[in-house]
Structures are given as structure tokens and as C-alpha cells.
Image: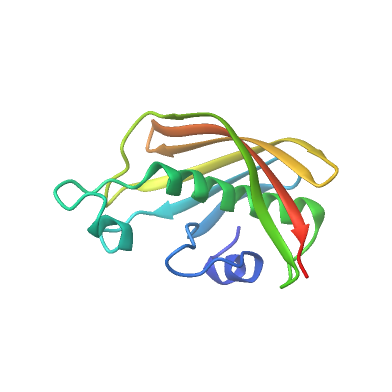
Length: 146
């Protein structure tokens, strides 16, 4: 549905903070499924943790937010420019169910729950295979910057 080259045109994030490798399903205005391949080469693994590498939970939430942003941009039919920033406005009910380790493939699911006055609310979850890694309700907003 969307390869890394298309993702780079939509998201402003770059290494080491781009956390979506591919979009595998996109249902305009409804839902998205994207993936993040988790490699031992990720820069955060050097410190989190040297003896037992685990993907930080906040980065799993960030990956979900990036997938949700791709859904929001597609829903609105816009490509963000240098004057637009997409921010977290809130995270509700975040629950971490399984550690994510090098070699895992994180499947990022986001469903658009509500969209009103530039505020987007998503139900999201990330899976490794059939196992739930994290779930959360994400609230995001787009803002113009000077």
C-alpha cells in the first residue's frame, strides 16, 4: 500500500526517529496497518538494555502515532509541508503486554475513532505475531507553525 519512499514524503521524521517501514493496509478514513521491523541495529538498544535489548514503550507509542498520522493525512487528502506539525495531544489507557525485542516485527494497527476541529482520536494496538505488545487510545492534532 505504501513503501518507505511514499512514507518519507508524508512523514517529517528521519533516522533515528522514523518508526514506520511500510504500510500494508489503508482504509481511507477508517484504519491503517503498518509495520516496523525491529533490528538489533536500532540506536536505542545500546542503552535499553545492554544485557537484554527491549524496545522502549514510548517508542512503540511513537510508532503507533506515526502510523496514525499517515492515516490522518490520507483521510484529509493532504501532504504535510514544512509549516505543519503533527503532535501528540494525549495518550489514554496505554498498556504494555509483551516486550518487543530485536528480530520482532511490530504490526501497527490504528483505527480512526473521531475527527473534530483538527483533533484526531485513534484506537491503536501493536502486535508481534498473534501477541498484543501494546494498546492505547491516541489523541493527536495538526498545527501550523510560523
